[in-house]
Picture 1 (cartoon, rainbow, N blue to C red):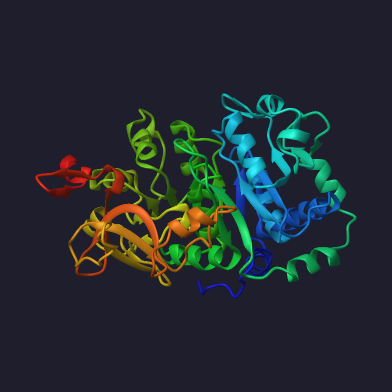
Picture 2 (picture 1 turned 60 degrees about the vertical axis):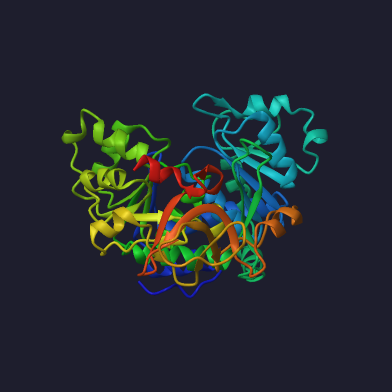
Length: 440
């Protein structure tokens, strides 16, 4: 499929819906949406957000499990020129307060709870919200349970129905491709999370390139149990399929038997998952009761043995991937048609529009092929961390390359080989040794 002409999220949704109006776009929670139906849902909800006073560049946070409302809210927010703030579903009350406050979130769209996490109890711990998160103007609940004076997801849609389409069109036309669409927060296990800013045009261009490496077409169906708040979900997976007219099949959260059933019943062709997910599917005693011959390609990470586990599940053209939230998810992807040995042992060549160099972390000197050093990336990279100019400056070198903090080397064919994190490097006998070398 050719690269879409669109460079903003609302234009992309219109373009793909016009091209594939009756093709299934989204499946989840026993509901199905064609591209026409998804566009209609997104536009109605976007008009509802306008009725609530959401304006361009406003931050609107989304906190819920993998359900259609997540994607509808995400695309609606972006369609207004507002910025979608994805909140980790494993968030603590402290982190939730920090993210809402730091991001200047004006509206929160959330379910009451997910698994063991009670988000409304967390909000109660933050009361009074007018003091702890003063910019927050309202809450929308996506489920039966409300939080104080919150309004329902359905009510937002109802408020949007009578609103003029012209107002929505004007909002979409005012979006510049360079505008920020997403604000994704990195892990805050050792420090406060950093807000990664991602732009409209790059979400389209880079994700389409990822799909091209995986040979994605409008006939592909992606099984997605990876949490949508994660870059692999709302960056890579969602826009990979949207730019190719494919279908996203959501699993609320990963559970191996339900995943096997879903992949088989929905005839999913693409696997997006982590090594532990693949291992759980492979080891499940009921695996042979499900037909997984529909699987073809997708993306995963791991050792050669872990990559082979996905192949043994049926995804014979699985792609090895590498990247960070800051690099629009993947910046290197193997090609689905490459020999399995290459896909098992490297993370592929840089995507078009991406430059990668390997440098000595101490001197910044570029290293020759085959020598392990820090991976640095230029091209599709975040424009910076939200409200943190110091960390933004510190993240790039003098040549404008993003310093990933990861180790790797480029082989003679220009393929990247990931070797771990720089902080994990072990020095022995005056020689730097990556942990992965010891493991192997």
